[in-house]
Amino acid sequence: MGSSSRPEVVHAPRRIRTIAVTGSASGIGAAVSRRFERSGARVIGVDIHDAQVTADLSEPAGRAKAVSAVAELCGSRLDGLVVCAGLGPQTQPTESIARVNFFGALDVLDGLLPLLSAGEVPAAVVVASNAAGLTPAHQELLQALLDGDEDKASACAAGLDGSTVYGTSKLALTRAMRRRAGAWGKAGVRLNAVAPGPVDTPLLAGGLEDPVLGPLIEALPVPMGRRANPTEIAAAIGFLLDPANGYIHGSVLFVDGGSDALLRPDIL
Image (tube, rainbow, N blue to C red; front, side, top):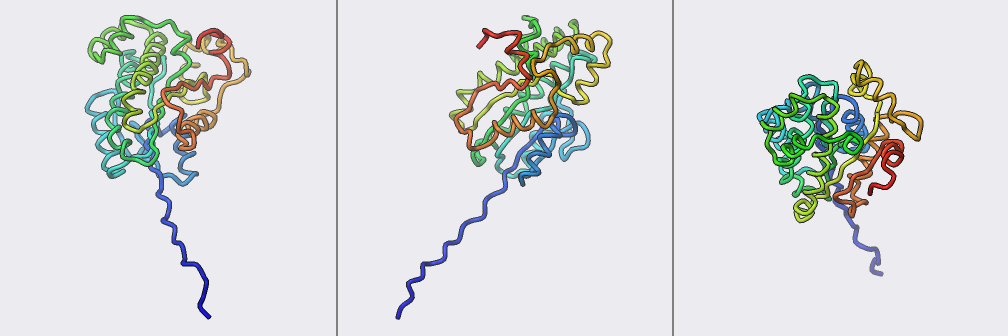
């Protein structure tokens, strides 16, 4: 009698996702790296030290080095990108805040788009800040940033306080992200941002130690009554990168304990 057994079905092994993370050596970037490594993903860390790719994102040459090194390590495709690298408002000189937080973020983001477009259900997340909406923006600096004029933006930022440069750079980064929604959508790559409030990281610790910035940070009302843990921000980033959330694109997710809603309840 002939056998009625079905032919064996062989499933192809699932490909390991490759995620690049800038600012991976500490704070939110380190928490993001740990989260994806635990999930089985391959993480390519980028930072000024203690990373697979060491690069200074305050300079164009460093950004180009970061892009080329990530490309070499990941091959021809990248499944996810998290742009965490940033400088706090206590940083001197203040023009370096604009160089890293805006130009450093966007040059890496745009430079890696071709690799992301070849990835599997690809997505990218930029780490902005709720300061983008809570800190009064300096209009000349904002326009120079959005115009892509790094020399003019740096010269303008050099004459401003760090808090203004930080908030304006994060606002410009958020707008630049949203302005890319059309082109990135056509390329098949989702792009979103998270806007954290105060997070217990070395960056925040530096701000708290500043005699001027420290009291301002402490005075920010947070309805949840505490600061965030970096793992909570990493969880939000993981949500935005999850292929299951494939229709979230061009959005800003506030992860700030309700501060933005408290202070700007009617801004949508």
